Amino acid sequence: MSTESFRPPNLALTTIGLSLATFMQVLDTTIANVALPHIAGDLGANASQSTWVITSFAVSNAIALPLTGWLVRRIGEVRLFIGMTLLFSLTSFLCGIAESMPMLIAFRALQGAVAGPMYPVTQSLLLSIYPPHKRGQALALLMTVVIVAPIVGPILGGWITDSYSWPWIFFVNVPVGMFAAFIVFNQMRHRGDVTTRPKMDYVGLATLVVGIGALQILLDKGNEEDWFNSPFIVACAVVSAIALVVFVIWELTDKEPIVNLRLFRHRNFSAGTFAMTLGYAAFFAINILVPQWLQQYMGYTATWAGLAAAPIGILPVLLTPLVGRYVNNFDLRLVASVSFTILGVTCFLRSQFYSEVDFYHVAMAQFIAGLGVAIYFMPLTQIVLSPLHSHEIAAGTGLATCVRNMGGSFAASITSYMWQNRAIFHHARMTEHVTPYDPGSREAIAALGHGNSDAAYAMLERTINQQAYQLSFNELFFVLGWIFLGLILVLWLTRPPFVAKVGAAGGGGH
Image (tube, rainbow, N blue to C red):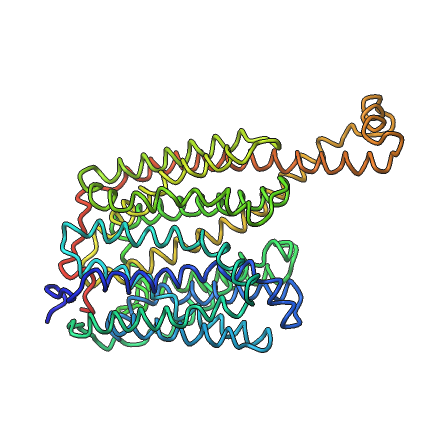
């Protein structure tokens, strides 16, 4: 049976299988973060070494994502999905039984590599099995998984680590992955994927691995290594720049490139990917800043910080059916513009926070932002995919997701750096006049310390430090608000129609 006319025997069951695999894969990008201290302690490693558990996954995942199109043409979508899901379960098991830090890092790198194609192929398969008038609902469902999984990850990871032990954050993937693979195999084994044997673009592959790998390491380790004051970071930057320039030139001139960069010739694909990448980067920055600010400078525990940040996922879950069903009744540019407006306004609201702000206002800002998130991913994804043909869907999704994830990596590094850098600036400004010779300072020290100057200075230092980071927090959210509003202009560079040319929605190959 051709991919254009194929429908699985049970559409709901197939959707569950595909969504479970994606949820598991996206969850693993954040679930290990909170367990790093336990992992380092058990495996006899220091904190710096343990961060490679995150970095190794991110690097190999970033490399594998843009290879999705080539793998689909070679293997076929259904076989690729099943194979990668089973390999993900296997590598998760290997991570759980790792007896040393080098072993765990190696297995995490393998896990990230097999995880790379899973999301793009899932999206392509979902589009292919739904009739045209229901594809919006399929996309909305998948977007909800992508939004909720990173939010649930740290909470679930912390609970599993505290209640059991850190290997179980990996072991839980094994039955889920096997179940998802079995469902999809049982439902879609008769789908007629067309495959070819494209030549291996060794130059493209080598420059992709080196360029993306060095860039991801630079972004993950930049803050830790003091950025360009470190010879290691400088070397990563030079290697990445050279490799990526060669990669782009080679892929645009090669007859059979391993990554189809020519997809950027489509206005909707390029403008939509740009808007999605910057929007995701700003959204990622919010998810980094809020929990860290709450825990480090507002006195929240990890659990309460998670509860305060979690409301951003409530409305996306509740509104998924409505968004998927009715969003195509409107101009998708308008819907995404409303999303960016809501996200921008909530950033401006957070830029007014102060050190005594209560839980309710923090959680309410997150809750309102959830409305913007609910109508963000689905319209933008549809705009990005709209100019692509059947055989380009998996490749386009892999490429756009790779660029989007790199935007998130840039956001993580830049946000952490700017928050600390601006806090140092504000700290210096506020302490300029705090000296024993300033009458106001002497009065404050006397009032705070009750005769104990050392205690007074320590208390004053904590207060100034908290206020410095609060001012930096406010400045960053003010900038994020303008980024969201500025992206509205990019959205209107795209042109309708926004219905993807997916008769097969991502058939197996050319």
